[in-house]
Length: 125
Ligand SMILES: [Ca+2]
Image (tube, rainbow, N blue to C red; front, side, top):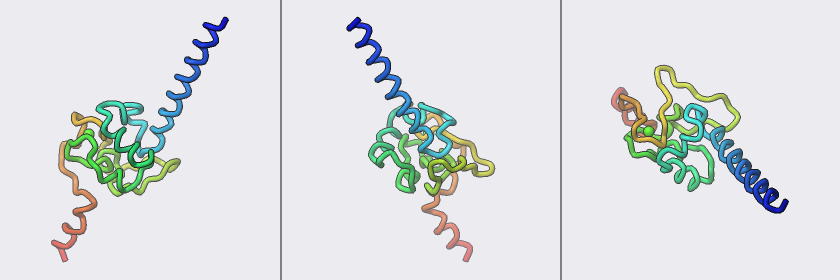
């Protein structure tokens, strides 16, 4: 009986951890696109997400966790990091969602990063 109880505790503990981690998917924009792989592909986005207090914001959006040349915000369609939990997922017309934790998943083009938008606008003044 004690063996079964220990096994049950371990199963419940594992399920609780999985559910807790699954809820993180809802804390980043378009997190459902890659589900758990949003953090668990190369685990670099996971590290940045943890170091950012498990929050999505501009600081995390402008990082390029997987080092593929596209910021996390560009890959998750929220380049400025303005999306907040429980809001509808952002969709940028003409863009797709890419995995911020995979170098093999990136936009085929070089979108204009929000940090350089001011410089682009200055060219047309
Ligand atoms: Ca990527």
